[in-house]
Length: 434
Image (cartoon, rainbow, N blue to C red; front, side):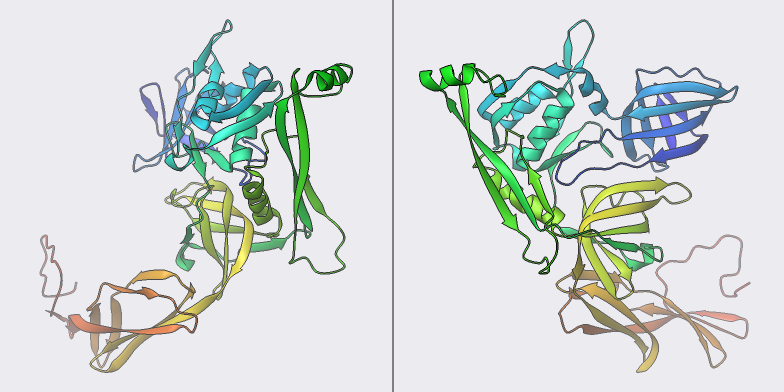
């Protein structure tokens, strides 16, 4: 890993921490950050970008330096935060939206204070699937970040501020990715929260007040909406049919978010139920070179024959030759799996057998492998005649046979090259194994 500040690449890093997160319902809007001790005698100033890269030059974060203090004569401690940190300093007055295009709303929200009352836009990307959405309802006086959180909560999107140059407004992707067992550290932690028995939301419909209604409301100093507007409220709820009988009532109730209306209530209840009715969380350590990040839906191994699917809400990275991450999966659920039995053969002889436990319905493509086997005084390298085993996993399980051929045969100090893809030789006798 290395950090670029201005035009300088800093490769001597210590105590690098990076743990991006999201909330899959956008009940919260985290300001993600990384911190690092940089071994340098350079002066590093706050108020500029720090770019975090891996050794293959892939960008992990482009964050704004909010803290840079010298720890000793050789080390500067740097803390950099996502662009959302700017939005806390921008305040908006109360606003009434009436079917305003989402992009128009976001253009007004995604700003930062540029000093002396000047606001500068924050560049962002809006996913194409969200561009037809409109926003209707009322927002009270808020910071820009609070307003963005309200809008994202009402439309079912999240803000991705990691592994990109600028923030992205995205929907949750329901397509799961299987994290291989070979990339998973033993043993994941599976936990269960209390049952949530129901979720309910209050929807608001705004209309212009009649003269009589306006006169009545003029004397009600607790009425929260702008003068001239009146709101009808309606509660909607859905019960958790999976909650056992006798469980104590434990509802989740959402009210006071005035962007909830009859048009988005159904989708909102569905998202809340998906989060709160699925009470399993999974903490799992995996090899993660930015392949699995918050917002992704993944399938992980709880054991060799146990699978869970859920959304990554946070990924706490540790850095070495490869990156390792502790993933926290929310709204996790059991996944039905089945066994794929693979047999490697040569001239009718079984060379090796292995079993893969895969999700039912999963379209798999498993790379075959070379085998190194010694028998009858010969050391053979067997080459699979197919590169991969492919198929879709049926509920009853499946089996596959991989036919092999001899690639190398080493016996009594002589190497017989039967079939290889490529030979690279430099100053050695390729007919003999040293």
